[in-house]
Image 1 (tube, rainbow, N blue to C red):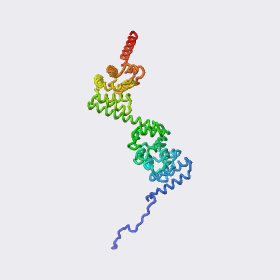
Image 2 (cartoon, rainbow, N blue to C red):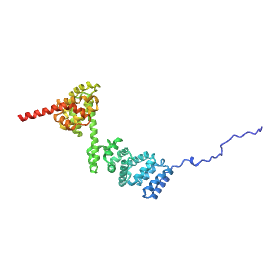
Image 3 (spheres, rainbow, N blue to C red):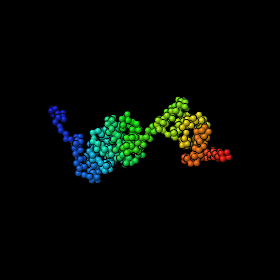
Image 4 (cartoon, rainbow, N blue to C red):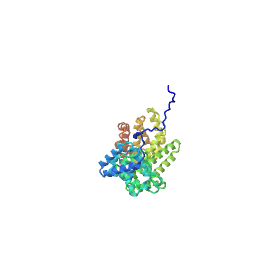
Length: 392
């Protein structure tokens, strides 16, 4: 056996060859930009060639890593015109991971609108409108326009005019409204203006003058909706607190005038508030008696907001709808209407109009049958009254 001491292995001086794919590629957005711009310049205005180039480049270049640079080139660089949108949509569909990044890029661009010329802002506004219309963007990107600096300098409303004109032109106001509601932007449009100018009157004048009456009308409806919700909430609260009918009526009339809510809308809100202020019996045979007692007690509130024939008819239709939607009230309809007639909330004319031509389809056969005898009595009473007048 050799007495020579065995040497321990050492790593000193050892060199390992690294495979190329294991080396981390250096982040180089400039080189990426040059590659994309060069390719786009070569394709020129041939959209098919552009689409093919961008599609194939995604396999060679790292779109995921350089998404921000890609969007800067296409959007901020002015290469993404209206005719280019279809190409861009294909790119987004091909590389789905770009969707979120693109939305974030647009939000960022909107925050820095003051850095663009007026011409560039108009172009970006129209492009954004197209992308909103075809679903490439969510309306949530509009939140960037509520930035204080943009609002203060009037950049936000001016940009919004161009954007909404294009959006409505590509779709329609109903589609725009649905998209706004989906992300809660429908109630925030006033934020395009400084706090001291956040009124419907100012909003309306600004957008009507800009040729966007549809947007003005939409904002008015939203304002009315907000006022109606607030009115119903307050009425229910007042009823639960036992506030006198006189005070409730005064409050309701004041809100009508202040918020421009029609009497027809108020009577619907009043009915809902009254019917929602009590826990109803689950037994059908007992709920009718409970309803008659409850409505008789609250009839002054209904009477105060049925001063017009149309309001009476609106209430009748609301009662019909309520009784149809709440199965336990199906048999109570006729008795409720009779009560409201007796306490002078509903007139003979309103009942007859409802019966002959203005009723809803909901539960039509059931409710018309319930009302048949009462309507016959009303008609006979009317004929007797007319004959007495002729005799006199």
